[in-house]
Image (tube, rainbow, N blue to C red):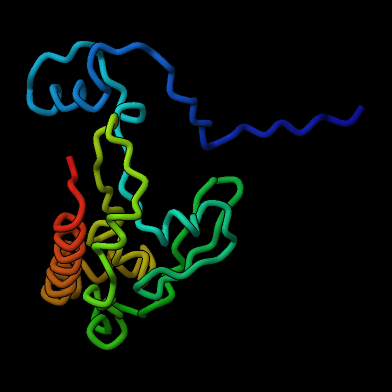
Length: 184
């Protein structure tokens, strides 16, 4: 008798938001908690909020895409088993190459005003912006995890310069979005 293969899903399914008759909106209730006030009910972040996604992310979601490349040139391969994309560490050999090989997108070339106007905003939910890939996560996406660890020990000054540049870029990105869309 052949054994039946059992697959355990690694990514949970997202349940639909329950339709309730709330005395205030889920956004107002969540904002009470975030402002250290007593909420009317225990909020659920997923049901009470909305993540800001640019039109590029909305129109071409990376989920299920077998291969994609981000703004920095990092290649990602999608894993069905993991339900996510994994960076390939293909941009540089070590952190000393970051000034020559790392591409920083020119954020001034995007029409942030139109982008914000076309965003499908749900006013009943709190809007937040998720900034994935912190400086170290970005570093090991660019060159591989082991090399990033080696660079932390052997090139601490260069790693700091790189991280300062990444943080400055992310701040510029956040400010451009914040200037055109109200983030809760």
